[in-house]
Image (cartoon, rainbow, N blue to C red; front, side, top):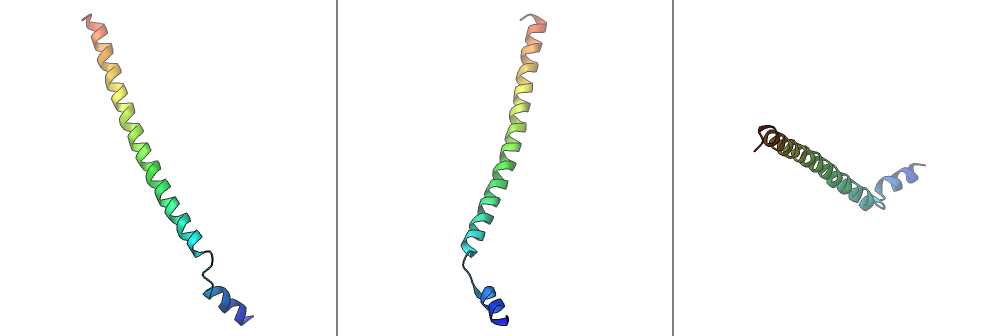
Length: 61
């Protein structure tokens, strides 16, 4: 039983898969954060444009 545990601890097979999964998770988190901030900026820009158009329509120019 002791030999099995030692062999499992020293076995590095599958280690690359875990590392790639962590890299993919980090990149995914960065993308989610970036898209979230970008969408907030786009909504703010759209609101600014619609307010400008509304004020132009209200003044009749």
